[in-house]
Length: 135
Image 1 (cartoon, rainbow, N blue to C red):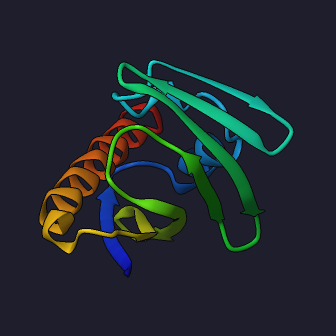
Image 2 (cartoon, rainbow, N blue to C red; image 1 turned 180 degrees about the vertical axis):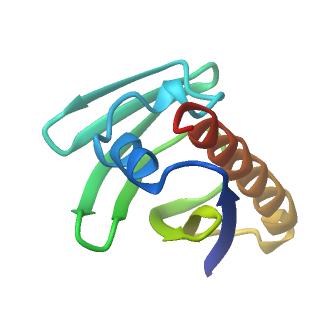
């Protein structure tokens, strides 16, 4: 069944710096703690974790609206499939708002609370990392 997890993060950081970091598509290991290395070839990205590789396809980099969209084609971390993540950077008077959402399919809905908790924690760690390197 198709599910969506939506998160919003307020960052005390320059939105242009946050967007520049996200939109380059590489270097995810610099701001997302679970990622130990990241490589990019064309629109294909491989993010390595201790549990294995996340094989991704970059679907969209919209510089005008600061929207980054990616598909996770293969991943060993969670019992989900057909994963599409979307990150949007919005400048506001307090700094930056990061909207980071994930759409996915899950077969066993009993696992949804665990998946939701894991994704929200991962996204919060990523938002913290982006804030730290975008001051």
